[in-house]
Image 1 (cartoon, rainbow, N blue to C red):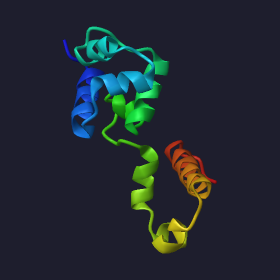
Image 2 (image 1 turned 90 degrees about the vertical axis):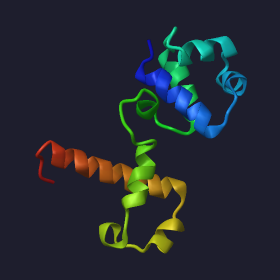
Image 3 (image 1 turned 180 degrees about the vertical axis):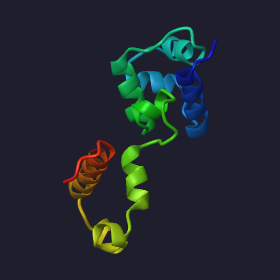
Image 4 (image 1 turned 120 degrees about the vertical axis):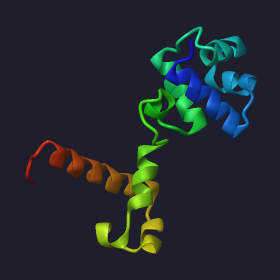
Length: 120
């Protein structure tokens, strides 16, 4: 019986046009193991899920079917605008990846504080 992981994995393999043997090699597992994941005959260990998520450039939660957002950082990047962060998109694009990550991390921190009902 299929599960969210097997469905999502198969969908990503098809969408990205990656061969099962290529994914297996990059993840350090066998092609038969990938086939077992796709056919829901076997569930991967967390470390393997993390490797496959990295290879497919998605979050672990997306790969496990817990969210439809492929990468939380990319979602935040998509909604940033001048009013939100006080800089233009052009200036934002000049930032290093580390600086962009700091902005995302801080935005997530603030959101979590709001969700908890805490005032800063």
